Image (cartoon, rainbow, N blue to C red; front, side):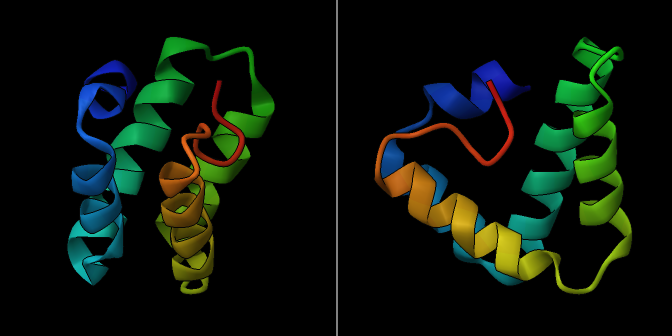
Length: 78
């Protein structure tokens, strides 16, 4: 899923991350798929749990949206 997300246009990724509920779903899918791809990385598990359970994850979602605009990988992703 991360590869599919990274193949999207930069503006499309930014818009997907900015829409409140859609951005949360996109983050969940990308974060959990990254953890399932590399289950030995504990940091991916912690970040996926934070995105799933915490209400302040929208702050991290905004950080990811800015990183996407700067052509950098999402926070704590390869």
